Image 1: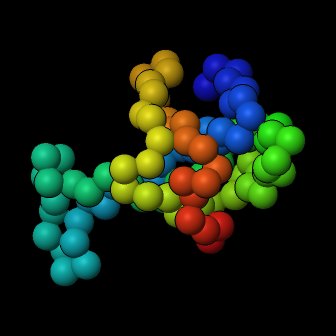
Image 2 (image 1 turned 135 degrees about the vertical axis):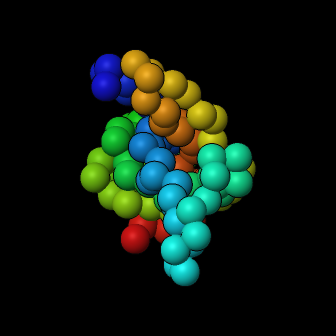
Length: 90
């Protein structure tokens, strides 16, 4: 991954892999896969004067279904979002 440094209160997240099968073993085709709503924090900004950052690189987090912006670097997909789009550290 290239060296990306999020600014202010933004966070760079590597989304978890989408589920390949249902719990009962049915394979899910690519067109029907849900967008992941969790991932690993790779980098965080420095925060703002009003907002100190809570998450840190290595944290696994849950975020909203429509949160952030998807970006692609060297063929890998990442999400960049505000820390306020993150619901929880898991």
